[in-house]
Image 1: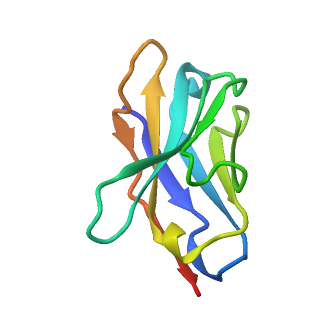
Image 2: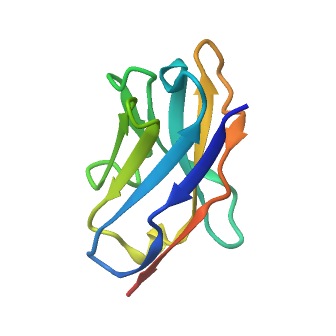
Image 3: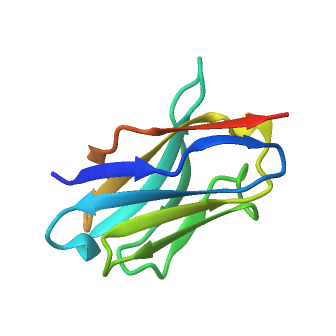
Amino acid sequence: QVQLVESGGGLVQAGGSLRLSCAASVRTFSNYGMGWFRQAPGKEREFVAGISWSGVRTSYANSVKGRFTISRDNAKNTVYLQMNSLKPEDTAVYYCAAQKRGSSLYDSWGQGTQVTVSA
């Protein structure tokens, strides 16, 4: 099990930017693919972005493609989500998650960080 702690959420105006961080407590961070998910009030949790263990491969939800960038620093056991051109519909609790190499499941989750985008 990987312990994950998100930070960097907050209140921002539409068009603004935020960078989320997720620190992982695990011996070999590079054994894990990482993802960001979000859940808005009254909606199901949805995938936002993912990055492979090496950082070479990334993937994004269509709704954030071109605005959000996922990255990782394996030396710091940290994954980031740079969010630009934020929209009110990006308002949600954002969670990071870990996926062990060879697995198709994200089975470790952080507690979440709130992002609120005002119009």
